[in-house]
Length: 198
Image 1 (cartoon, rainbow, N blue to C red):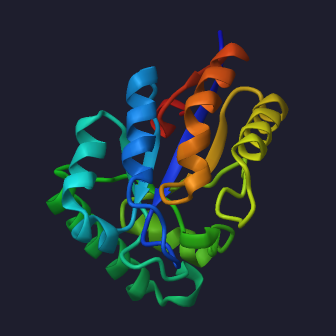
Image 2: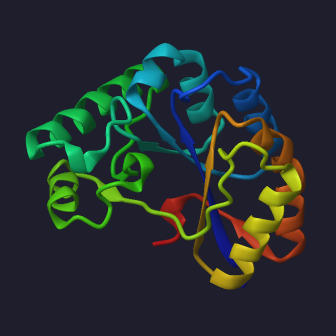
Image 3: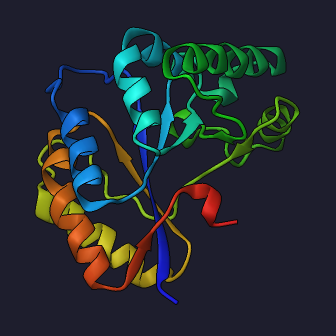
């Protein structure tokens, strides 16, 4: 059996200008390769980009919740966490036509080790999904070759069940994805949605 890897793509408003064509290029690369990914979508982004949110869903990718506005979960009260998840869920469902439950990822990963935050996420009907492979695709100066090697090295290290973190907006991610998918498959990887990891 091939060693499974979940490519996860946090889809949010970036903190600085980016190329609008990157997400369509990512979706095109996944579609051309017949590969599935998991998109953690920020509610505010979904409301601003309903056509793209719907395309992600219609292309058959797994959809997760990435909060309403990318506020760190560990800075919010329990009620604030519940509100962020609930409002994001409504925005994602309205824009993309799918409910993101039960998958959630904390913005910046902050709060993912905090029992209070995790309990609030669970009460809201979600499971937190972290990552085991981080190619730091958002860092200035990152090259497609860097990203590919970091993910391949992480996959070799993790074996079955690795979860790679990427983002929808960096130029490098869109540029690297076609070759990354090809090389992962050559390495025997099965590309799956997070729900297939169990």
